[in-house]
Length: 502
Image 1 (tube, one colour):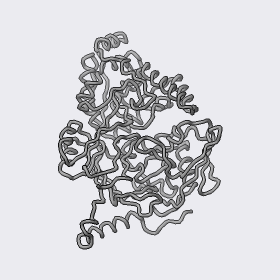
Image 2 (spheres, helix red, strand yellow):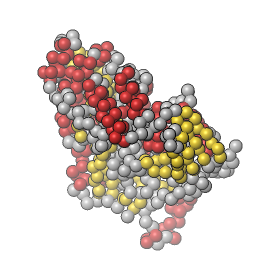
Image 3 (cartoon, helix red, strand yellow):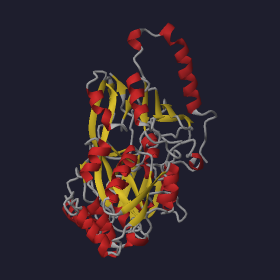
Image 4 (cartoon, helix red, strand yellow):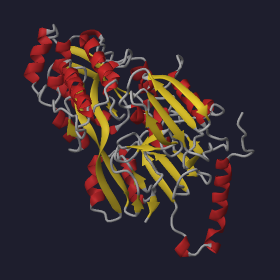
């Protein structure tokens, strides 16, 4: 059993911060009083704060790299970097990965970190009763062994070219057995920030980890505000109530911020494939002709222009255009209402069709949904819109598959493999696609992997699994003096570990 400290670090740090705030005007000269706190806003509140037990991107957007760490981490360029693993070696046959762990690491409650925590975290994620939303990341692992406190040996069932990248996901962070059960509301990790408090419906507060094993955070405190409404986000930024909004929900306001010298505006890329998702086994949607009709009925560029004010790159499959393995399939289903009508008639729905369209809170979904519903109406498809909050979407759509159509942006990196899962909310079951994924997962050669990824993209397009809309742009707006925020989003993160005020 690991020894725990008597009092939580977070409470001490918050108390110290308060005390400093009371005496700072008298004791600190202006030259030393550089701002060391940041208020960053995001659109969606996470359902909880445990990245190993939920699918919501908002969880990682708060805790990834800030509070929790994995053996590896993904940096701002999308590259794999060491994290809790200082280094690693791979056997010649690609089946054994030996990780050397960082020394001197402690969890935020003061308990020590060692190889037993890694084994616990991986075994927990792979367990039959695992609630990890990305359990498939661990499918290739046969065994996790811990020959000593500073070494972890991972043995694979077959070579896995993506293992190091997969271990850098938020779903693969390392947690302690003593605190894992409470991480949803009181996250305890090893990162450079310690959880302070969560004022639900408003904000999450973090403070600098003064006992961090690596390079300490430059910020003493970080607050993440939840501001979903585009107008409210614009007003808060203009008023100076927030310092930054890393994925601004009002693209129509970009020109206003670009013209204001107080702000820096950065339009970056994300891993967010934004789709009109289809329940492939739901009534008429099990007919490929109906799904293809929907694809021909949607004008992607009109959705981008109307919902995103021109920001976004059209896609024809579930893959990011900035990736070197991307295949441009946007011409597979050109906007053609007459073709859509003909396909619907051929499928026996010439007199019309009524489908549900459940829209989660993001503006791309709510605004895009109205446009798409109007486009579908032109070909005889009535899309009955219902707006659902994020927890409801996760429960009804993602878990319960109780929907016909929905709009969502899949921001997980390199996530084309979700279409090969036995159970996933699209309900797409195809043996040939699964075979492609199996081969991809055991292929290490980059050129061969890119070829398989191309084949997978073409298969999804041919089967018209979903209506692939656009790659979500990242609208960054922040105070011109803030340095270190990510311009792009290779993973779901608001990484504050290198942020400071100039």
